Length: 119
Image 1 (tube, rainbow, N blue to C red):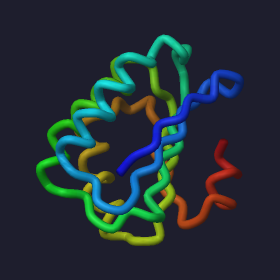
Image 2 (cartoon, helix red, strand yellow; image 1 turned 90 degrees about the vertical axis):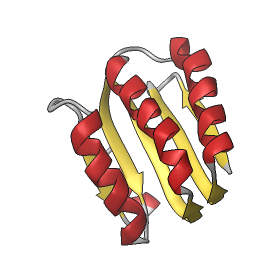
Image 3 (tube, rainbow, N blue to C red; image 1 turned 120 degrees about the vertical axis):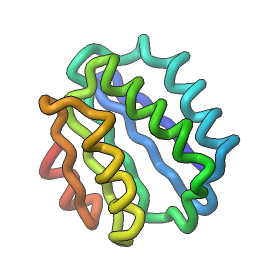
C-alpha cells in the first residue's frame, strides 16, 4: 500500500509505503506522481516513510526504479528515507547509486523526528 502527498508550500512530496507493496501499487504510484509533478518546482525534496512497510515485492522494483529516474529527471535534490528495518533501506540505497545524480542527497533516518532535522 502507498500514500502520496504533495506539500507545495515546502516543495516536497511525502511518500509512505506500508504493509505489502506490490507491482500494481508501484505502477499506480509512478502514474500518480507523473500526473502530479506539476505541483512541485525543481529542487524538490522527497520524504519516504518505510516504517510500516512489511514487504516490498521484487516485482515492484522495476516501477520503483522508474519512479527514482523520474524524480531525478524532474529536479529532486534531497531524498530522506525513514526506516527502522535496515534490509528495506539496503536495496533502495543500492538503487540510489544508479538512479540519482551526484547532486541528489540521500539521507536515511530511523525516526521521523530525526528526519525532521534534514527537512
